[in-house]
Image 1 (cartoon, rainbow, N blue to C red):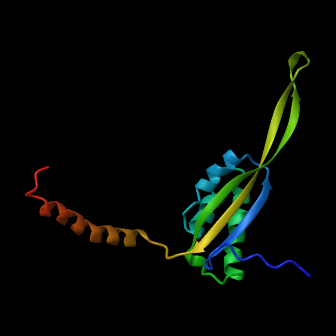
Image 2: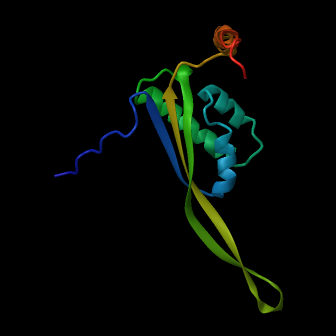
Image 3: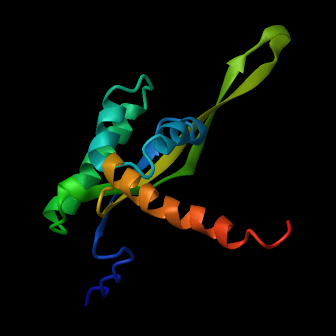
Length: 153
């Protein structure tokens, strides 16, 4: 008998891609991952395409894989995808030695990382939508001080 399948940990409107053992330190990888968090998937791909960081190419591959998983495996709308999480974790550390003066050695650490990208289907808010929402909230905010005019501060 085979083992039972694990239950799905993500919501039905989410898809993920995982890259393991990337040859980049987690600290450097997290800079690139932070640049795509909470962005629409199309904009995140564009940002990674023109990024100067070397690791951005691998992050872009992972993001495109997550988008493909969402489209092909979960039948999600690609135009409504947003990068909800981009988690970076530590992997192994390769240790090498570098010869130094007077017969000594210095340790060189070569860090590896894990990357997990989750995309979710959401309504993407445009700038016009945000302006309309703020304009609708503004009159309500300005009405509240008028109600408190008689109350001393």
